[in-house]
Image 1 (cartoon, protein in one colour):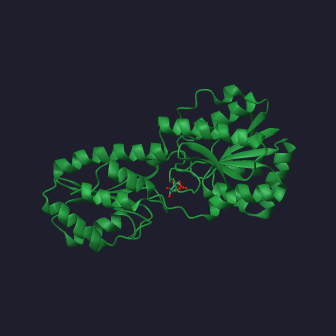
Image 2 (image 1 turned 90 degrees about the vertical axis):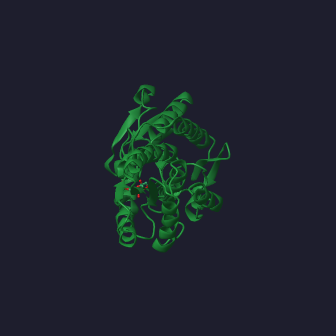
Image 3 (image 1 turned 90 degrees about the horizontal axis):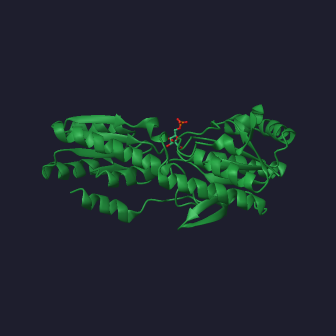
Length: 323
Ligand code: F6P
């Protein structure tokens, strides 16, 4: 067996630790491993490299992905996938391990069915928005990055008695926003999954102002319904002109950085499990963490089940703790 490993979609801290685990577990089992650069684009372009144990030395602590990544539109077409298959076959690759999010998984699922290639997927995205794993690679690191930023903003916000709107990533997922908001002591959090209009936000801010808070921080997830931090800040300022408002968009800095110990361990466990499952003959599954166990879920189920990882309890608690 020759295993091809690739990363695809948005990079996430922990991807390198996971590549390392896949490569070394496969080599340990006497299989050879090929690194596929730039995800599906690399299959179409035949951008491959034979991996040795030394190819993955000294990468466990690095953010990003040494295999690079891409969002590849050509792979959504039958012609693109046919070309990818021909290159993979010519390189002798007969099984795949893909690390990424739902876009990566839908590509893997179709490709595996069309060309009868075994494939195992590993959840890697800072959004933590996949069914079948309590956590995805990169989410813990990204949340810690956001908390560090909130702490710093709090220093200056308190010094000037200011109201800050901090926009965090998560187009469809409020996991980073909610958890970083709680850990950073935010006064309010706007999430994509739960509607909160400007009226409700303003009444929460009024409560904060009445309790003589020196600073107020509102976390705005990028996909929430009011249109993002700048718009929300403008509307609030129009109603409460006594507030000195500021906006910080954290953006892509949330995707970088050295992975946390949690992400490194999770990446190692999932990479190891993916190879083991492949060798045991499994295919078209995603390995994930349930409780503290590694389990496999069919890709079809991962793609079709809607996931809601926010708890109403936590939302309520956030309000209570911010008074
Ligand atoms: O899926 C991860 C993520 O970082 C989202 O939170 C964000 O909306 C998106 O990727 C940004 O993608 P890109 O880097 O392609 O602009």
